[in-house]
Image: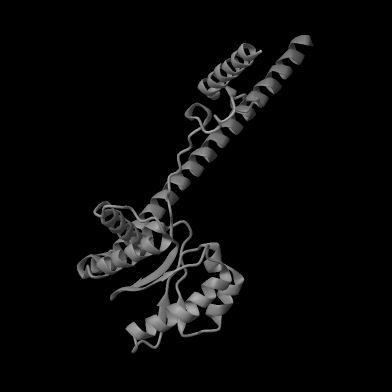
Length: 253
């Protein structure tokens, strides 16, 4: 009896090992795995899963012709209510602090649905001293803040690669992001070049739009020409058929 039990356990172990080895072919299938007592955590019975350990921290910030403004850490995804609180309690006080002599605030934002929803647009309309710039859709190449975000991310990656251990908490990552923001903010010449590039970006955008308009006009003209030619061919065929019918009638007579 003892020999039979041992043989049974060996067979079950061999079956379990074979199932582990062929687990790639068993995806999507249900299977019963047999193992001997006390071998639950044996390496042959454990499927190893790797996690990236990636963490992220959402944040919001602004910049002006004088450089970077305030960077603010967000709590989760930004919604309309949070954005209004952010504009009222972070953007306005910080802009007034850095630009105390400006009576008017010229504000630019992209066309994200949170930025352009009715609730947020009413907030802007109730503050006439904020002039909101109308921004064309799908135009991240016009927004110099995109370049600034990219530079902050590059600085963050560089800083992370120089420390012995990657940040494992959001607070640790946020400290690095704040440091990177300050470092980019100190690069005045780079930020001035970004601001100075806005007229050139707008001119290039106008030229691109004109080229697209010209191409569309040429395409429409070519399509109209093709339609006219097709109409002419149809008219010619109808005329030929009518002529043939008249000729046949004359021959019959």
